[in-house]
Length: 97
Image (tube, helix red, strand yellow):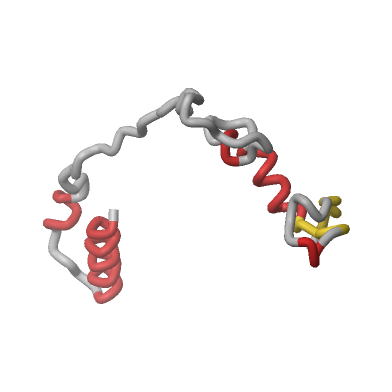
């Protein structure tokens, strides 16, 4: 695993752990990526104040349930065991979709 060494002072963390901490590189990359989003306040070194503007809210549309697009296919008669298994898999996949 790739690690990045981070230097911290005893005032930043518990007095018993002063010196160097190793942070997995993927964690540091995730934190750096987060810093460039609307959630950057989570990685800021300055405290968030009650007078600070809230981050921009970007809602995501969740579409309502749509009827099956495979009704014609599911209505066809099953001829083989393999077709039966495929039909059952399609019905299950649509249930979880």
